[in-house]
Image 1 (cartoon, helix red, strand yellow):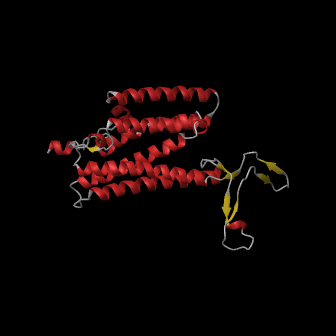
Image 2 (cartoon, rainbow, N blue to C red; image 1 turned 60 degrees about the vertical axis):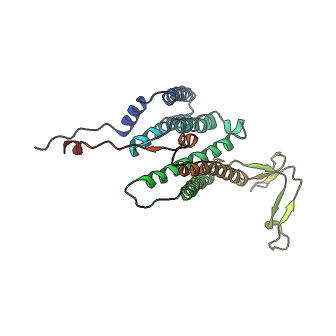
Image 3 (cartoon, rainbow, N blue to C red; image 1 turned 90 degrees about the horizontal axis):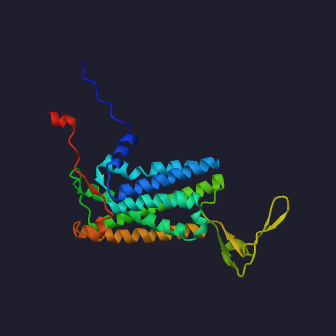
Length: 282
């Protein structure tokens, strides 16, 4: 009769156990943020705001992601990087969405997109660097190529996120791509000859919307309403800035063979994989 296999605990349970083993700043921050989210979750539930309740639950699961990645692919996330990731999740989901910081503070979204570009470049860099150091692959990539790959990875994530925002706006009218009020437009659509010559309108002070029933609504915004284009371009630009900053840091990190103190705070390191039970029995 074959021996019974020991049942392993679930992925979430093992991730929580790994979190409990953490010490120092990361563990303290995790506990504080988690308690804050739980308090907000209860308050939103009592207010019957179930959409925000879902965001709180999502945030609690996202807090587990860094530790899950560490345990699953055997990498060590530096404390600085892990702290930034946890604060980023809290700032985006709790402060940004539930506390409406995106509206209260106009540059909150810009700050997070810049940080997102930085973090995604760090993740992309780490993934390629791990492959670069692995004995399973015979290809060795240059520091410049690693930096370019990290940059492209970050920009790709940024573009995919803008695709997601546009899709949500079109399907559910969420206005994730925030609108901008502008006083000048230039478009070939208004060319009286029907050609390809842009026609400009300057000094716009208001916008009147005429609906299908013929009624008119003056929006009183002080200009023309740009539907998300400028917001998207701004988000991609600051994502570009964050990606460039980390790509430069990563380039010099690899160039100095990992001796840079500053860069090492953001770049995960490969941990030696524990020997399996079968290998130990052999």
